[in-house]
Length: 395
Image (tube, rainbow, N blue to C red; front, side):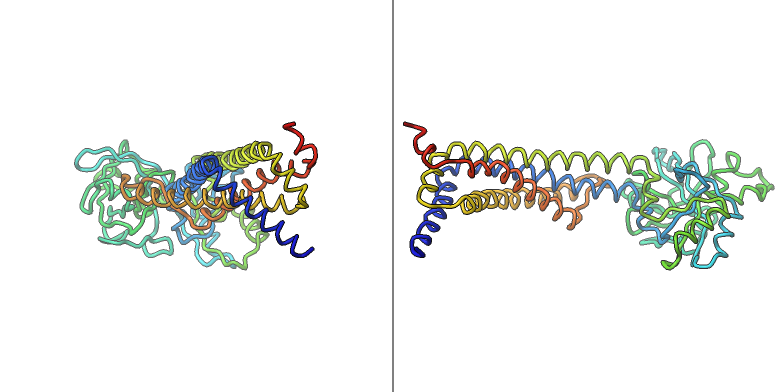
């Protein structure tokens, strides 16, 4: 009995291998479909990671772990306005390691070559924990109107020594430094200025104060948000109590990404496309194995008549599906990684593309699981095949 069982098992393994070799054209075509789906899924994961990085890289790189906004159910940097009492109120609370005012305004401007620019102007206090490091040039505050630009703006042709003139307000900014990485918000590069210069450009009259005069002190009492470095031990209840007392709404760094409307739309769109590809993979593989099982009905009936169990046949067929999936995934993911790196290297500066290893692995595992589920559902037809009926179908 043991020898017979071993022969049956060897025969069935031989059948599974023979199927792959005999119908190599069909399996190769289905493997190509799996590879294309895996390619799209992986490439989209790189696009998704790049969009997130390009959209909110300024927030990601910021040393703050929370941001306090003017009280609002859905706060944004654009609409928020905090006053001196708010950021000074945060500075004196237990558990607050740092609290600094942060200015945020989107501007259009022109460089000295009259080329149009669009960027986000951030106002920070030099020497504070929100100060930005530079890869070349001087730091923020080295001169009264000196600014540090994101490397993305430098890639677009702006150089140290250039003068940027803000549209409408006519404030002139002198580029003195460049960051070592891309720091953007809503896909626009960030330009870092001193907080007073930001306040002057945002709240002051066009061109600044008249000659011989100074802007009123009230202009320098406002910012867009409070950048916070909170002790991890500070509880949500303590943060909520501070918000209620000071009239603010505080978000952690991850939640602050939602202040960018484009971030929410992009992440949802890419996630929806990825979900569609997972479902498509399951349906296509399920349909393929359903048709393949129907075509092999007589063969399966013969093997069952020889004593093969339903369980073994199911494992045997799922083994075929697993080989097909692994082969397709290896080809698709590999090509996507190669083409993604080449695309990033040859695309223009600021192109949003970035692979996250964990995202690539999760995407591949989702496709593998979806394919196995789709194949398993269709292959269950094997259990309903009766040997005598299957063998007598053609008679």
